[in-house]
Length: 344
Image (tube, rainbow, N blue to C red):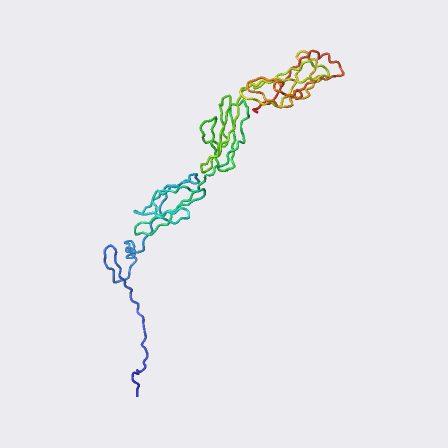
């Protein structure tokens, strides 16, 4: 007896898969027509994407149209920016801050020294956020060290031109100069001035770093004097063999400033009335003026009037020779003096 519900076994027929074209339905954004019956072609996809049915397009990155120079000593910063997408709105970030809504122009104040970064991005309606546009700059409010005069005129001098050389430990520094209280102007590291008048002069110089900070001013002063300068005279009297005499020099200062006289030396010339009396054989300059002296402006002073100890006066001696020196009786010898004068 056959069991109820039992079915006779029979082999399964062969199975074959049949691939059918995939059909889609899409809405055309502009016409509202239904696209059906067939595969989506590349041309149709491009048209649909352009019509706005695809992913939102990105807003163009904004352009920063004005920003601080770098480096700068300004402690505030203003930025202007724009975007080619109509109706774009902006968000800004300063240094490590997060982006926040902003408008052009945007200003920041009370900035500290150092490097800063400003970023701005844009977003237009129905578009995704743009990438950020950034601008980095440096605030530097520290002045450079004052310059150094490595070359300057002699003081005093008879030259009516002056050459200087300036240097500064800030390698990027330039210089500003002002002559005799005039306006300060940009100058080279080797300024030259010509056609200067007789009298006192001063050049004032400052260093300027790349951020525009000015150093403390330094000055170089000098005096242009007329040729001829100061004068020294002095006579030795009553010389005799074996006798020495100090010279009480007279110094004339024609300038309107004091002078300091140093390095006084003495040269004795041949006798004007006893040519057979040789100064080199009979006379000896023991020493010149041993100390510097200061002579007041527009004055004539002797060493005695200046309070110089006679032991420091120049000393001239007549030698006591073994041979007769009668030819030197009453001889007169011109004396030539050389010295150096400077401002004390």
